[in-house]
Structure formats: structure tokens, C-alpha cells
Length: 297
Image (cartoon, rainbow, N blue to C red; front, side, top):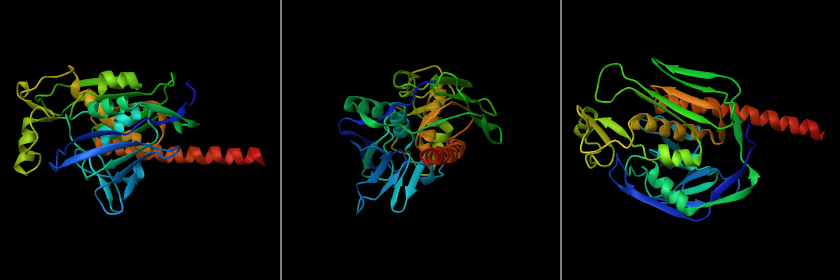
């Protein structure tokens, strides 16, 4: 089992800009260094008073096809790609200023965030990172979908996804799993892109949503495969689902040490697991605090 490491923040401010998938609005995401125990805090720089929101599951709100958080006047949409990059690069403390509600879609992956954060560099901070070590199997289900959290003997967390459908379609059944280290995430997971079928894309367009999004900004699958695009990996869709899983579970707000596998799950099921793990982490912190008080008495 690896030992707890110290907290990290970024060494310098960095910026990622683009248009939101849903809103089509131009938005900039400015990531700043932050003090010890700040966590990941999102701030609406476009609103009076710059209201903010801690990026934890207690502020999560359900949404279709994306993960949102909100608190008071501060609301943020589609945060999972940013959160996955911050978590996988082991960045514990960061203040993120966003001049809009929806984060940019970019190319549908975490790679632009990873590139910006890697260029900014890391600073080691003088306190240990909070962590939750999974010690028993936790399983949650929604119909034919399920997600599990279980102990991992190596001390290096594993995230995996099993993609399957009820009927034949243009996206093949596939799976992917990886040990979540900064190098593995950067090379093998961050570039994996959001995907939809052409039928889903057309349905969104008919509703007036995402009409500006082109075939180069995400993977759109027709009968013969990606439309006007190429796969980066044979199982890119499963890799992107694993990316989403990292981002959604990062809302627990601490380092997770365990094996996390999702079968046909999505943001809703991920959110339920994040809430369960958050409650477990709170219980663990209370137990550790009580133990320290008893020892000091």
C-alpha cells in the first residue's frame, strides 16, 4: 500500500477557452494556484460578487448526459472533463474561474485541460492529502447497469468501464480499465472523446441543441463508424466512459484508493456512488478525529 502523499496545487495560472456544447457560448476557464485545503473551487467570474461553489458531490445536480454542480447563484454545467484532469494529475487545490455556466466542449476530451495544467506545473504543499481507502465491496444498481467499488491490493486505484447495449448499433461492445496515474491518464485516457450516434445527434439538433457542434468536436457514429472522423483507440468509447467515471467520482473530494468498475453506467449512477463514498469518507474522518482526541486525553 502506498503512503499518503502531500497535497498539490498548480505552480502558475493557466487558461482553456472554447464554446459550450449545449449553450454555444464562448467561455474561458482560468485555473489558479490555491492554498492548502482549498479543494477544487469553481467561481463564476461573469456574475456580480463572483459566487463560487466547492466541486463536491453535495453540490451535484442531476442532468442528462453531463455532470453539473450548483450552490446559490453559482451553477456550472459539464464539469466532468475538467474534474477528471485535476484528479488524475493529483491536483488537490485549485481555484477555477469560469465566465459562463457551461464549460467548453473543446474536442470532447480532457486533453486540453491536461495540456494546460501540465504546462502550469505542480507545487508540493506542506500537508497530507485526504484519502479514502475502500475496505469492502460496494455495489449500486440501476436496472441492467451497475457500479462497484472494491479494495485494491496495490494501493494504486483502478478505474474501468464495460460498454454494452440492448440492441445492435454502430458502437461495438467494448471495455477498458487502467491504473490511475498521471502518466497513464495523460497518455491513454485524456484524449478519449465524447461520443453519440448520428441518430442521437440529429435528435439534439431537432430540439435546437448543439447545432454548432461539428463532427470534429466529438465522435458521431453512423452505420459505418465515426462520421468524418477517426478513432484514436479501438475502444475509445469505453475509455471516455472511464474518463467520465474518474471525473464524477472526484466529487468525493479526496483521493480514492480502490477499484471502481462501471457496467453500462452513466453520470447518474456515478453520482450515486460518489455520494455513497462521500458519506463513507465523512464517517472515516469523524472516526479518525475521535481516535486522536481519545489518544490526546
